[in-house]
Image (cartoon, rainbow over all chains, first blue to last red):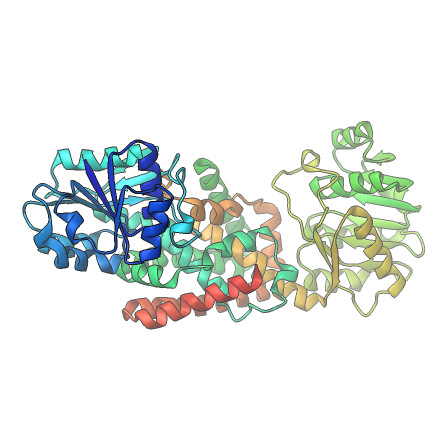
Length: 278
Length: 278
């Protein structure tokens, strides 16, 4: 089985390392950066390396694209004539609905694209952030479409299992995007807005404790990646922000009226939900 | 020197333990719960214990009140006739301006009240959450008023040093409240609003990663304490929420217009500020 990994950053590199450890017999790594390819070869993360995908695509059984959201569709468009018959592609993008719509419009009939989302971010960019145990105990989401063949979905599920993922769940693309808007994108939107507040100053850390440090951690954000992710999931994210604002307004109204009873009930509700979760 | 600690919860108990370790020669612990007093005596956190403060107040050089915000003023009002001449009181409340105004109106001339804020919260309630190294490397804020004597401010600073605090900073009560509204109260308001969102469900954890777990940690909130703290600092907190909402609106506007350039600039600004801080 020939696996081609396009993009040898923290995510692509970690897939290469963990699948190499698992004993995959042919992993071809593709990255536009020659030094990255050289490093991956030297370190033994990949069997073969190249800076352009054409040659590899003719032989690929599975192609794992670890590209930015905006590059997925253009990759398929640019290289679709070179796809091997029966080839299965998969991505690692954090948004689904809009990319699926774009890709399925241009995908050739003889290839299948299984859209997936490994739920493990990376603080370190590039191949330096790759780690052979990065995906141990991590969750992954697969978002099957009507066009996907069951056997191909299972191939990608197996790929994730082999890479170390613990729980691999199938959900609809729409559910995926709505839930990710809430649990991940909203968190990032709140964090960057806190940090950009006019109240931020050189004195801030004199007053800040753990909660501020934790809540602002994700404001150290990769603006190129997240700028794209937010826009690709615009409707779901705006809707998550609206639900959040509704609750913040309940909080503000109780506060404005000195309504301690309502305020405490609001806090107690959050406490119970948080304890149910963790 | 006789130190009286009123309230033997996680904070009062930790002060008792760390000052006992430091060698303080007379620590009297007061708590309305008889079992708590018994436990503190048994464990050797305090030299003497009682369930009512009257007798201790006649001999106290320093009285550390670890009470809820709403109890500070009523404590002073109820016991002010028993305060020893030259006695120094101090509190651990997370809000200052409104409590200072209330207390200074009724405080007898022969006693001084140094308002302070140890910057270390507690997940565990009660004396079970007390820890002799709780305050190691912690920050504390002292908010002197025009009425305070310099020597008394220094007495409380020494008390904090002896308890293990690392950085003890003097700030005005108003600055304290504005900054705490931003770095602490706003974080809690956002966290509880996220958890109370209509999007919260039993499926949430299927999608949630570290950022959601971290950001919602403080939604497991003590609603009685925080309900009071929010209302005592209402104006500053509403103003912090407003500054935050202003930035969230900038984010939303860029998103609505698909303005990727402005959105990425907004994210990059947050990234730089976060890296400046940590």
